[in-house]
Amino acid sequence: MNNLNAVAFCAIGAVMELLPHVFPAWFSPAHADQASSRALWLDLMGAVQVTLGAGYLVRARVMPALARILSVAPDGEEGALALRAARGTAHR
Image (cartoon, rainbow, N blue to C red; front, top):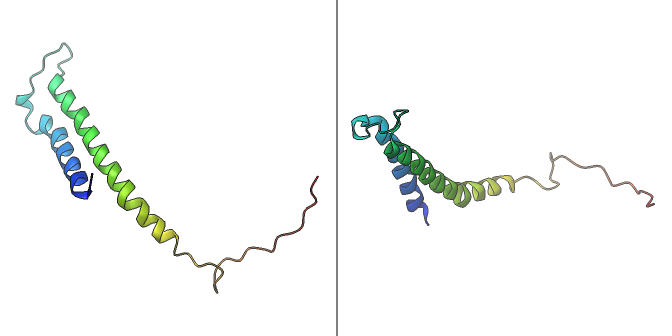
């Protein structure tokens, strides 16, 4: 998967989730609780599609960017938080 595929997964999933709300006449209620199996299926699959696409984008782009940002922290430079010198401890 690449970034374009992940964005397409998110977009298709969002459309799948919106269809039953935008066009309710296409999804007639078929059960006693007035739920439409088609609408429920599209909601579930839309959530799966968005989760797959967003999960890839977070893993491939957000986490490396966050690691790069956090690795820029100064190491022992002026103004950095200095740790106290380690004290000797007796081993038991």
